[in-house]
Amino acid sequence: MATLDYYGHSTFGITTDDGTRVIIDPFFEDNPWTEVGPSEVEADFIFCTHGHFDHFVDAIAIAKNTGATLVGTFELVEYAQSQGVENTHPMHIGGGWNFPFGRVKMTVAIHGGRVYGEGAEGFTTNPAGLLFDLGPGKRLYHAGDTALTMDMRLLKGKVDVALLPMGDNCTMCPEDAVTAIEFIEPSVVIPIHYDTWPYIEQDVEAFRVLVGDRARVEIVEPGKGSYEF
Image (tube, rainbow, N blue to C red; front, top):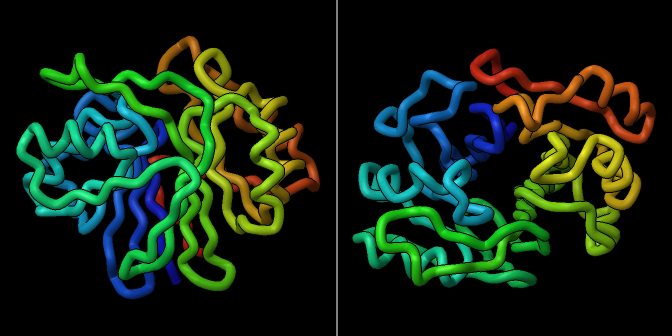
C-alpha cells in the first residue's frame, strides 16, 4: 500500500510501496495546519506545482537538508539550482517522466506564475498539476492551484484519487470542484486548499454533500492518520 500524509493546505507526503518518500508543495514553517517543521521532513523527491510562497517556501531548505531531488517546471528548477540545490529534475506542462517509484506527468493548471524567494524576481513559470501513476489503483492527481479547466476532461479514466482545491477566491470554488469531479470521474476525492486563512474558509461537510455519489469524499485531517491507497 502507498501512504498519503496530509500536512494541510496543499502539502502532502507520499510513501510509495518501495519506501520512496515524496513531498508535494512543501509549506511547513508558516503553515497553521501543522506543527511539523521543515527540518523534520524526510524526502527523496520534492515536487512543486508552482512557485508561490504557500507551495514552495520550504522546498530549497528541505532539498538541501535531505539531498532530495527537487522536481518542477524548468524555470522553478533553474531558480532552485541558482540557490545551491544540487539534485533537480526539470519538467514542463504535458511532459512526463518515469521515476524509480512510478511515472509522473505535469498537467495544465490556471493560476499565477511568480516564483517566491530571494533573487527570484527574474523567474516566472507556469503553474501545473501532477499526475502520479504508482501502479494499478494508485493513480493520484494533485491539481495544484487551479481554476476549473476543460483540460480536466482529458484525465477521465486516468485518476483513482484526486486532490482538488475547493477554497474559492484563489482556486476553484466547491461547485467548480464538483464539475471537475464530473470531468475526471475519480473514485476518491480529497479536498485541499481550504480553511488555511479566512478568505478560503469552506464548509467541507457541505462539499461532501455537493459531491454526492459522484465520488467518495475523504476528508483527511492533518496529523490525524494517513490515507492508504
